[in-house]
Image 1: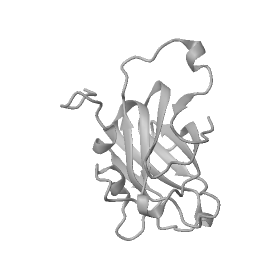
Image 2: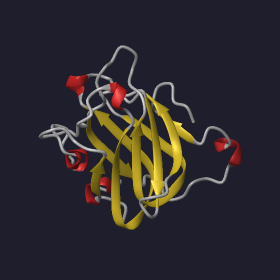
Image 3: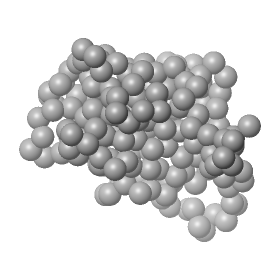
Image 4: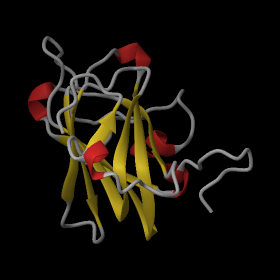
Length: 171
């Protein structure tokens, strides 16, 4: 069932296991999918020259999704620039499904033009904004299945491969 008791879509990330390259002190990656924007994940590799860093959500059974939203910690500002979203069924071989630039502290949402089904979703941060020396720190990583059927109108979705609310997204 993909609807909450209130009738809206369920945040599938809440039932996932979160892992990452590493974490700093009291900011474990499990904070990124706990439903609480007051907590956060921060990589132990704080400096931009230590990129890339990644965070990943995993489920025992594959989930179907069409939307992700990532929130950066507002107190740190808008740090993330380049990032990749990838999916995998085995946790080893990943397929890139989205390349983006910038997230923002008010959240960045990607609505894909199709449903993806996978056991693992990984976001790899590859660069930070110009003049920023610290890595992104993420308060929430949300995953949703918002629509039941995706249209077959090929002209509508020929290019790009996702509808994005990110600024300057590259698809």
